[in-house]
Amino acid sequence: MTKQAIIDIGSNSMRLTLYHTDGDSFKILFKEKIMAGLAGYVENGRLSQEGMDRACKGLLEFREILSALGIEQVEVLATASLRNITNTEEAVSYMKQVTGFSVQVISGKEEAFFGYSGAMREFHLDWGAFTDIGGASTEIVVFSGGKPFFSASFPVGSLNLYREYVKKILNKEKALHRIQQKIEKEIVLEESLLSYGAAPLVCVGGTARSILQIAKKLYPEKGERNYVTDKELRDICKILFSGDRDAIDLILKIAPDRIHTLIPGASILQYIVHRLGSHKLMISKYGVREGYLCQKILQTDLNGISTPKIGN
Image (cartoon, rainbow, N blue to C red; front, top):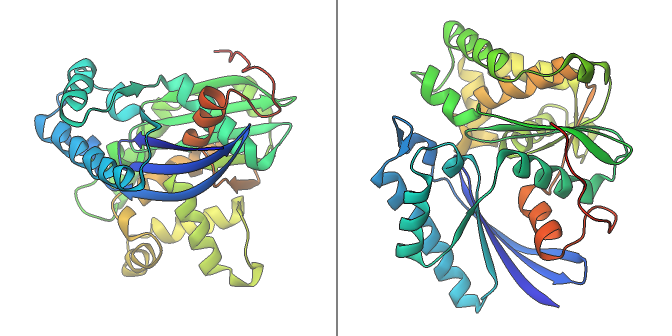
């Protein structure tokens, strides 16, 4: 039995999760989150010095917490936040120099598979699709027979859409249309995948969790749950996209830290649901960090077998 910490440097948030591991099982002891918004510090494709300092500040805060707890086993991951910039090596080197942390930048395909692997620790589905909507990228996996056969990472996320197209907190009709056009251009799914109509869609990430919380508030009669129907998603998006005060109030009550990014993120989610024809969205409490923990540290996958290769 041991304690293992994993830090995930995302484009929108930085997250620390501490686990208690025993063999191939784990238990989450606590989580900490910092809304760093690193995608907002990318200038001409480069992470600015201010952005690198912002990331270091978050890492040092996490280091202080871990030091106080006496935690020595720490893995630091970075996704699109450092993957989709032109000065990745410079940023990683600087963070190592300032914080002492060695940052592992994982590929888009690795991020997709780790997210899928983590979610399947909860749901154990044989077939369906998986998506992780982040600040600067969106990952999609389609699987059958308990194994993924399609995996892709698309360079579009809730925060970079906000930065590019939204001038105010809420999306006016023109901005929303441009966002939807960008999503359709970037997220290209093969026609063969669209035959998976009605496949359950497993979701991880802040956008999906926020949508679930909104659904619980709007439909309290359904009680505690971990899913959202496609009809509920359409109704929620209609409210969010309306651009009126009710939409602002709803976001501020449920997910105030996503006041800028929830609408772009919901646009991505709605598009994926529409394209795949999914009727049910299952929101997992696990994701990339748990998948990485199982695959790379505990060295076991969903059923204790070796990690499968993912097709293009």
